Structures are given as C-alpha cells and as structure tokens.
Image (cartoon, rainbow, N blue to C red; front, side, top):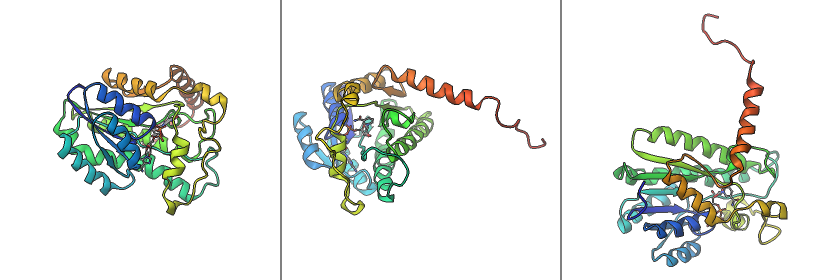
Length: 276
Ligand SMILES: NC(=O)c1ccc[n+]([C@@H]2O[C@H](COP(=O)([O-])OP(=O)(O)OC[C@H]3O[C@@H](n4cnc5c(N)ncnc54)[C@H](O)[C@@H]3O)[C@@H](O)[C@H]2O)c1
C-alpha cells in the first residue's frame, strides 16, 4: 500500500510500539489518528505530529464505532489500520489464574483487535486497493516456552494469531492487505501501563517491581527499541509480508518449533475414509 497522502489509525498509539508507529507513519506523510484508552498519552503523541488524539477503549465496541466515525469526519476514510493496543500481566503460568486475569488480557488482546477491525472495516473497504490492516500479536502467540512463562497472555496472543489468519483469508478477494506484527521483546512500559489501565472492576494488578519490568538484565539485552519495531512493521507492510517479526533470530526459533511438531506427529493417526 501507499503510505504517503493516506490516513492511518493506530490503537495503543499513546505509548511504545504504537507511539513509534504513529511517528513513523506521520513521517511517511500519512495523517494519523492516535487512539488510546489513556487520553493524555494519546494527546501527547498527537501533538508531536500535529494531529489529535482519540480516547477509545478497544474492549468496548461502541466506543470504537463512535471514534471511528469521528476519525472519518476529521481525516477521511482510513487506508491503514494498526490494531496494536495490548496489555500483559505479571509473568507466571496459566494455572490458577483468576477469571478476571483471563478476562483482562482476552478482552484487550483478542476482542480489542476484533472490535477495532469491525469498527473500521467500512472505511477500509471504501479504500480497497490501497487499504491494509496491521494487527500486533506477539512471538508469544506463535511459540510457547520462550524466556519466561506468560500464561494467559500467551493464550490471548495465540488467539489473536488465529484471528489474523482468518482475517487474511477473509480479505483475500477484497484487495485489503493484512499483516501481523509478531514482536519479540521490545523495550516499552507495557508492564507498568497494563497495571495502570486495568479496569477497577477486574481487581488490582500488581505494578511492576521496577519501573521498567523488562525485569532481568538478560531480557533487556534481548530487547529492540519501539522505533526498530515500527521500522520492521512498515518495511513488512511495504514488502507485502504477512508475518512481520522484530528480531532476526525469530524465524530460526519458529523453524525449530514447527519441525518438532511435524516430527512428533509423523506416523500417528488413521487413514481417513468413512467406509473404513
Ligand atoms: N513490548 C513487548 O515486548 C511486546 C512484545 C510482543 C508484543 N507486544 C505487543 O505490542 C503491542 C503494543 O505494546 P507496547 O509494548 O508498545 O505497550 P505499551 O504499554 O507501551 O503501549 C500499549 C498502549 O495500549 C494502550 N491500551 C491498553 N489497553 C487499551 C484499551 N483497552 N483500549 C485502548 N488502548 C489501550 C495503553 O494505554 C498503551 O498506551 C501490544 O499488543 C503488545 O501485546 C509487545
């Protein structure tokens, strides 16, 4: 798709990868709607690129529909949608987590992406031929057993990957491109932000133990910057890629993972056939 002269909307645009996407897209000559649940953060980013922020809660379909219509009124129908808003929770296994924890990550990381696409699909269709959707999932949505147990977060991102695959198939004949950003570790404030934005009715989420809870120095050495993540995303969209990683070594990691699955499965199961 052509960036220059187009309109983009970015959820989670107030911080981290979303913020870097907003700045990079504005730099490429796009008009950008900076959307975030945190109004101050959205406005601060918007101010830097001479646009406005839109307060939106991606867990709330109605709030997205209202703000999508406002974006269209203000900037015209969008060409690029970045469904990027996401949250994490303190590291740990998938066992013995509260329903509220599951609800929090699923509502933002899965339903948030679904609501976002649904709210903008009419605008994207009106720009078919020059329209694209980028969903931010995670490497944690393609392979379990990385550096740390992420529990419900992993499950929400696996679901998000499935959603993107479905989206790609659904848009295949509509001239609307789809890409999925699958970041590895990116140095953002996601731990801190996620405890801050968690709705009170879901109960408190322990804030990170340190201001930057990319906690261990080991993890920190694996991080790329949000700017690098946004660069990867834009290059991937430009080159028509569906899977867009942020780290060079991730393809090899996946190769090992899927080879192990195939090796394990080979020789098991039955010949299909109803008369057998
Ligand atoms: N940082 C990483 O290491 C990493 C790795 C893999 C995937 N990701 C994914 O990248 C995306 C961006 O994360 P980030 O690291 O830049 O985090 P971040 O916290 O810096 O930015 C996320 C933004 O989303 C906003 N947000 C949260 N809930 C929202 C809601 N309900 N409605 C609207 N906005 C909401 C937050 O206010 C925040 O500004 C997320 O989907 C995350 O899961 C991040």
